Amino acid sequence: MNDHTLNAPQLSRRGLLKVGLLGSAFLATAGVTATLSGCSASVPASGLVTLRSSDLPFLRAVIPVILEGAVSVEKMPAAVEQSITGLDYSLTRFSPEMQKLTVQLFDVLALGLTRGPLTGVWGSWDNASTADVRSFLNRWQNSSLSLLKMGHASILQLVMLAWYGNSESWAHCGYPGPPKV
Image (cartoon, rainbow, N blue to C red):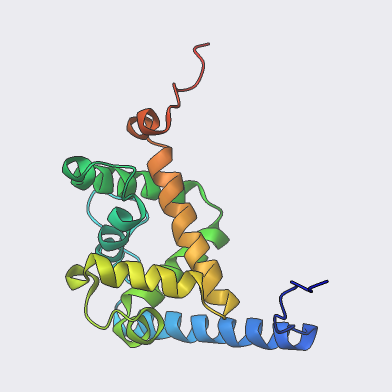
């Protein structure tokens, strides 16, 4: 009889604490660096409540890749802007701690010092190709670092929340909408 179990490396409690501590220290350092460099301006972008101008290039690069196949090419620009508006709306309803963590994630992704090594996108998000963004998402999804996997899951969930909360997305997935009361 063959044994088909995976021999994955085990993470001890001490190892988990070390990873969590290092990840927290890294995010805190990146957040402080972003704040001191002016990257993390807390002023929302024009027409938005929570999202900042520094967040928009990343979102405009990643949303089309995540929504690929769910939105036709000609409708993609409108879908991206609707998703950004929906994400901003949702963020205003998050707890202050969740808002803070989301802003820190966006800061890490916007700051060139951290963006390049962590994502593989060395230039600005404005110049990132679809292949670059796909590579970044795959890199984080399949990372051995749980912090990057959590970041990937957060990005995916934020975009899905924003897009599928929009009534224009419902027809694609066959959802007729909420029942009439």
